[in-house]
Image (cartoon, rainbow, N blue to C red):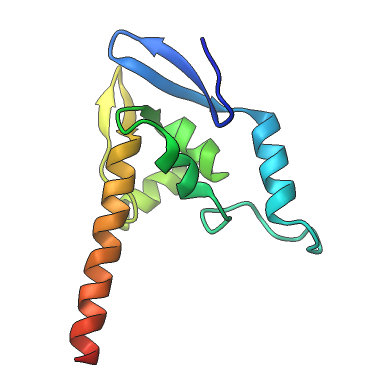
Length: 125
């Protein structure tokens, strides 16, 4: 297993998969994100840098449902709900586990942003 500053990977025959987000990163990131607040804020998908970390991963990096939940600071049920709402792309199963690539998540979000911008432009125009 090898580590970088964002996640812990496990090498598989299909390539590296995320198995955990390192606790030190999570602690340091949460502290930096909420410095100067009353401490009542919750780490969430709205926290600064969440998509930046996913975007910094190689596009082919595999992320399990559990790894994604940990990265977002949510439970796996929240990840499944986000898929149902269309906020995340549908995963593919790998060894029985819902799995995404970092690139699929970023692409899905970019496509959603482009669609929203196009719809907003039609409303204004």
